[in-house]
Length: 476
Image (cartoon, rainbow, N blue to C red; front, side, top):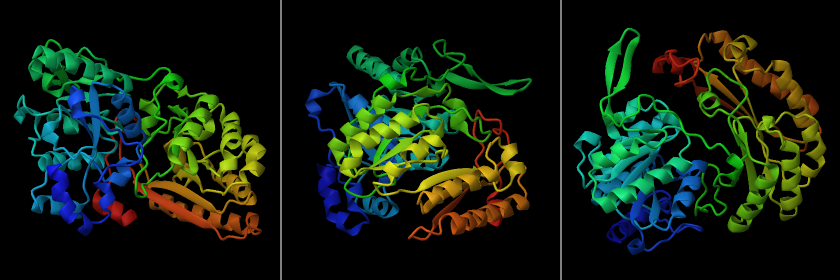
């Protein structure tokens, strides 16, 4: 409450104060005297981004179902708020109870992309906790991390006590069980971490050291409890896995402000740039009936008026027809929009096109990734120009007027001809709209994204050098 009393004085002066107040619909509230473990779940980015991350919602509610644990959210403040906090001597705090980070047993980071790395260091600085694990004491929180950006954890290894590789829904519970036992037995942090090595996918950086070999450097265990190889953990039955049906509803607009249904994990495509396509194997699907029930329950608990399907390649979902039909049966009368990502417009879509007309049309997203067929073949993106234009013709003839196209620049073996190809491809889409969409009452809204290629670990392009900043700016 001391933190809350301080920030109330300057909250009216910062942008979007609701980022820092908490108290949203479906936020978990617990009596601190009734819990054994306090867990600060930190997404090292601004509130609107972190609250859009489905994994945060899943882990937040999953771990809060434990009666012995209270998980609270922590986000990176926007620069204006950070300046105000420093000026008023306010450390980084949680949203649920506005507690400072030194009051928690666990400080857990979800790291979804590399741009978060620097925010991790900022979080330690703002929390008043030593950043390097070797500098922290027994009184400091246990610092852990997980997420898709640390399948290679070495860039942040020196900051972490333990790292989870893979999907952590089940292994996190095992760690908290062990932590509770450790607190009761009075173990040291080192003794706890040695025991934690027995948990699948847990990597303790301080128990390893680099060793030079004929093929380069390799990490070798220097503690007898450390595993020679740390394997990823996976959820084998996604249909039976935990999924929150009462997500928190923010007081302000966030990036993905809607019901998000994770329909499957994994991908069959094997695009050579895509880390998730390799690390999320094997493919595991949820049943259409399960997803429909989840959507209905979430709508009832939140009032959201849009459902979005989430996966790496939604068009490959084996029950896409029954799922769209089920969602329309249950939600169309409530005027809940069904947002379809990049689906192939085959007979399945055509079967439901007229019914989708009864609710408002959202935009469709497609990812050609590169501007020429030569480069799409190199990256193993099996989409041709003919595929794109044929799909666009069907999209526009069905009345859709909003399309997003995703590309990357800086890909391996890219030339300026490939960049020119992006421009020509976009012009082609506009031409198709001029013919197929001529009867549409609204004009075309065409959004084009050109992201910088980042080589990812465990992909065929992992050793490709990234373009320099100067080169990327020139290509942009």
